[in-house]
Length: 146
Image 1: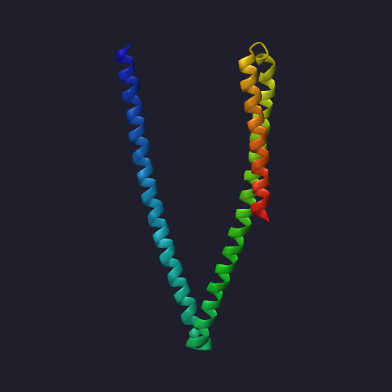
Image 2: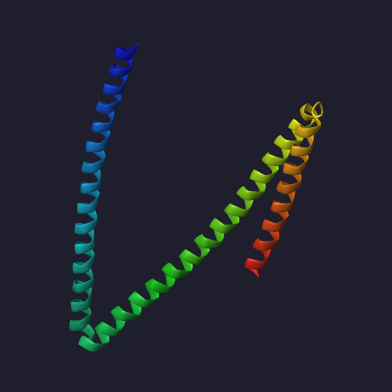
């Protein structure tokens, strides 16, 4: 029995080492891709700026590039805000579903608890706390949204 456990642990260790080596290599490759991608983006921005400077002049070219960067920031902020709202809505839906599942489980377990008065009191108390906590969370979420 002990020998089998050692073999299983040894096998698990080899799998872990293999996975760890792959994860480290993958992380290194992704970091290199990000670094070279950012470098390429910087060169593209410089190239566009120089081309605009030749066409419009230096100051107008820099103003155009600054305006584009500012507009890109605003777009990202709007996307972030929309994602945050969608995330909050998904959390509210998940919380409601969790409460319903818990309430259903407690209601399903109540008939089995009838045999014992202590268990029934405990189950009823847990159900009441769950229902009250769910209502309180809903009110708190409504206040935060306002």
